[in-house]
Image 1 (tube, one colour):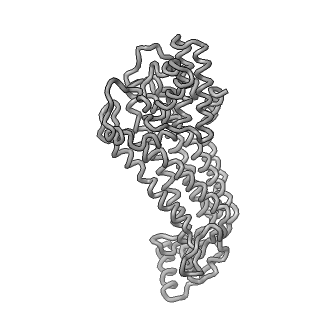
Image 2: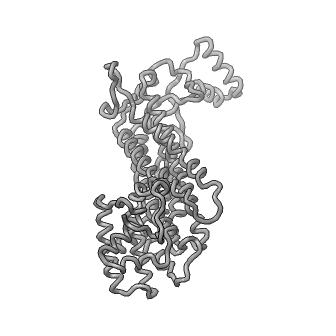
Length: 445
């Protein structure tokens, strides 16, 4: 059995080991390529302060690049008896390079290793999510522009209320995503700070060059105070979880609308047949299962901040093993959200709408406010106009004039989609993802 980084002259009880390791080996596979990147930056810095020779650095970097390639191919494994990703990487280096492989741990702890791994992993996931959000945003804007002149009923209390349009409906979700992107950018900026060099949370007696590792890894800055760097474990995950939950909230509402508007009682939208499922007994069924699952998964993701908060809620300053459990709910959440975003974008692209909904006299009352406003504009007091139209509706005398003219910003006739696109692009430009990608390419060059 492989030894552990912390092992001394006694063996731990096997059941205790099983319980304490838990799902950590499984979760650490998410972090493997980032553990390698963090190690590459760390040993480059160690060589600069005289703790490694240039020849040792060259050999270690070459070996780490080989491990990184294994990670990218999906061939990296954490062997039975090896505690975590950090131990596995060091074991592989030691097998290949002997005692030289053991030198990579100078000046750091597994605590700041996992902190930097999580930050490198998370910032990449946030970049992926930002790109997927933008893809869905673009599909919604395109559909909003395509159907900008197609009217539909708007609802309050699930009662028909006033005229709306598919331009407004699709565009509303696009603008919601533009606001959600602000949360994502804030989460990214808090994530993209370097904890490496904080060691176990109290720094090191080695003269570590933390500015160098910050630059090598493409972080915007470092977590300066080493105690705060350690306190960031859990806090980063919670902040990112809120950003995930915000996007998931938009997705859940959109999914609910899509399911409702697809039902025969509404028939406002038509989902592509290949995106629906059938019934084992009812041959006519075309169920919106994809949107139902998106709704459920999105609602589950909205619970993520509370899960993280409750795990870390009453922990004092310093590291505690409780934080290990956050990985189990946090790391898989990104794939789940990305899957939902991509599925939604795919279906929105292929969704069609009924362009004659308001031909049905059922919806005539939604034009009552238009008539009240027309009478008020001609000089009748608003309350008198309201009462007259209300009495006409009750007596069956109301005649709907379906030619409406809304011109103010954000209304049916003036969607402001170009401005919403500007908002989204401004936020995207504020991420500065190029710092991260350029730094990682340079490390691996």
